[in-house]
Length: 234
Ligand SMILES: [Ca+2]
Ligand SMILES: [Ca+2]
Ligand SMILES: [Ca+2]
Image (cartoon, rainbow, N blue to C red; front, top):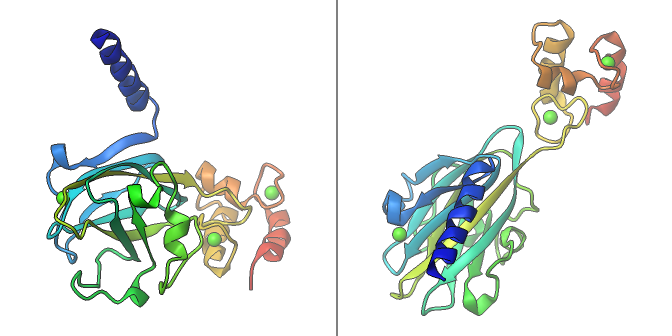
């Protein structure tokens, strides 16, 4: 029986490592404690697919981690994959940027982009909590998905009970909008220089040529200018 379980674990491990897009980016039992210094968080750039963070927190063990959503991608969801603790409630807060400005002893919620409670008491194990964070009480707020850029998370169990959790950060490509040269999901003035670069054949990378081919003709030429201007959000 044990052999079968081991084989199953091994196979699922193979499946996870073979399929690009599922990786544990930080496991405290392997990579050490996540930074407790909000001005110098542990930092990673997220990869397309599932990025897992596994850590243990308790009172006096704040976790500050900066996760960068790369250009051309967006954070689609944040799933609480597991939660083990004698205390059923832990906290996650988040700000845009690469530091966390709020002190744990006296945080101003109005400066947070979002926050959520998570754990067995909230019944959100296995669930996406990103949308809950964006509508939490008192926050700046947001609607998922989150666009490219750095985001810093403060994760903590306020009680002394050791709390081990796994969060899965799920990153997906921003769908290509014709004319969206900087891949942020919309066509604005910021896309004009990139469009001109392709039009003048200075930029010939296939991704950018595809983005600039606004009339979907297969090539980029003068015929794309009028539809690009139509697509521009003033
Ligand atoms: Ca920790
Ligand atoms: Ca754009
Ligand atoms: Ca074209």
